[in-house]
Image (cartoon, rainbow, N blue to C red):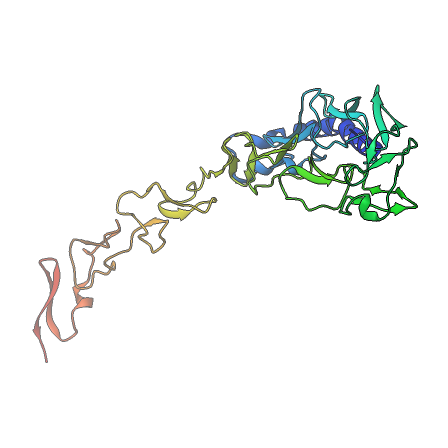
Length: 361
């Protein structure tokens, strides 16, 4: 059921998918082979050819879907003989997949052509359409009230309404007693459609409407870890594999969800709670030891100690003092002569502190 335009476009797409684009995808993957090592740093997941299938070159069709596995572009080909969704009724042909990503046309003698004129008998033989006038005994008209003239015309009308009612797919005219009807070609027509259902409402070539499969009317679910697929008019959103990247630090889980993982978020953090590269709050292991506490210096993610005492001996003249952060100072060298007031007559160190006696004044 193919027109020459559809067949030609499909042949080009199929040829490119089967050979040129598939080769280009593999070549690019080899050049970036080192970027996808498991456990790499934050940016390593994006170093390949692709993050999503849409990043790869080429155009998806019923016979070939782009894939992105481990950062490398490829193609998923439909099996040979799978019927393509977008068909044109009445051309004695059927579009099917060739198993290598291309679309080919095969003879289909059941796909008889029609233009809505019941006074013309149309047929297929070995994929070639033919037409002959209907006999003069055949009925025609809006309610089969007239007869064909044996030459392919419906005679006997008086007004346009005798031939039929105009609609988006047909215009009916009575000219000189003969119905001269104009029908929109099969598969065409400006009809209302529902987006994302893999179908298209078109004219049937006989003045009526019909629904055909539309491989371009993809069911977009706005999820990065699913494919948007049309299969013979049926929409689906199968999940990407669990090796597919869906962004920085993120990988698809094989069930359609994008999962973020940042195993190195705490590498340069000593303690406390941080926001990782996925936007999640995580508690890092406490690496603080001894007198050092998490946030001890005012930074919530750094180990440290805030002194409770200054290392100033003052009037202490023996022993040592500590700031409670592991730092000490020997006070045995304190000179009481310098500590005590000048008006003290006796300046001495008693019980680790300087004392002044006999103060004058």
